[in-house]
Length: 344
Length: 278
Image 1 (spheres, each protein chain N blue to C red):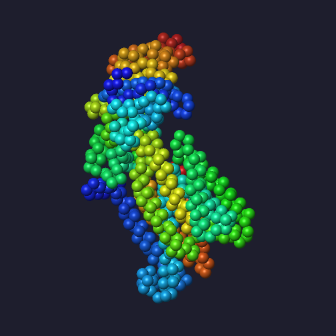
Image 2: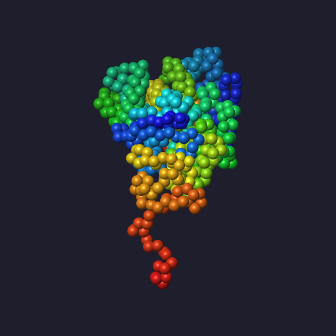
């Protein structure tokens, strides 16, 4: 039985899914642990106390450089990118009623990459231009996919199929752009395409923070409507929902979050796909569960980046390599598991 | 049209795309009735029901509820007055029964008022009235077809509307569960004052339960009224294209439609034939 807490205070009457609250608390603890590990471990190990001192501006000069200027912004960027991807994935999977309906599968991440590659290769722009290109590319792809998938409203499965098609085309376009570019540009574009948190600093944190906060508030506001939207359109409409409108709203928020994540760290694979699935299994709750998905995404990405940074010393890998590896294995396990249960 | 009933359609044209399926139809649903819409496949009965529930908006004409056109209602506002059981059986994976029924409270909730004692009371009442209270702790996936349909009805009851539209609610049920579900609907209509509108395939069950029967063909109403007053062999032949005899149902006295024997049926195992073959 799913237990719930009812909280009544004045005009407020809120309802919480008990296990989700507990899981969210544990995920916060895990995230704090992962962040502390990221701050202390490395080629230049820093003790926990000096690291915390450095975070609050009271450490040695070397610690403040390594922890305060290098590791902290990188790990915070990772946590925010993970949160954005986790939330975007939960919104898309809820809208499409499909565990594969995440932005990296249905083309939006590829579209954001196309935008970024145009900025890097065609227009020769720097980091700021790349970010703008990614957001514009993601939004344009979403608009096109949505328009193509609309016929008497947006059918969820059609959205997934049109998105997969659009993603395949955009992937080809991306590869074409790389093949046709100069060697040096091609290399930097290829590195960007793997997705990396290396060298991310405070400007990235300041760019992501408002996006994640606004996205989180909007996702929370959409939560009950999205939960109801997991029924058929006829049923949710008969309960007073406007499925088309909710879908458009959720996809808009999801594209905003996914594009911002791509703009900051490149098209990191798998987090948007897996975080909502993992959090759903942890909480056992229906609905998008954007908050727990966001926390799961943060934990996943911070740990993946730590592994990418430290596991293969002296070499540092882009985090996208690690998430790709882990994600592939996870997906195989998921499909095998669901298949055995007769649902795949 | 006199326009005295709460729910009525006035010259509505309903359809998908350009071709209207229901073309200029008017109907009044008697308040507190057990109205059943029957007709052949493609006669427009489900389309009409979807129009009455505003899942389809008429390209012409108007569906009116309480003297206001449906299009003038807010989506939650309408969902507090009129409930619908669609044909779709899809439910979120591993959702609990109590959770599912609680979703019926959505039109009564807001962002800051997600769950109040009146919600809990309505859910409890809905579970009790449908005899599903003992299923509350189970997950929906584990239930049988008959139990599932009862749970869907409970969800619609939790919505606390006074009008309930059901689109072929018996389709996936065996005969015993069909009777069981229609008994439940009839009980809700008689004891709790619901106005029920059902689309049904089984003509004989329709005549048993309906207080008001509506026969449709090609998007229009051919006949409507009390079943015993309108069901004749001629009407059934016109509506379904089925030659038949109509006799009084030995149990209820309502019209019982018996299809005529066709030449392709196997020979009847009548006693004298058995004697010949031996």
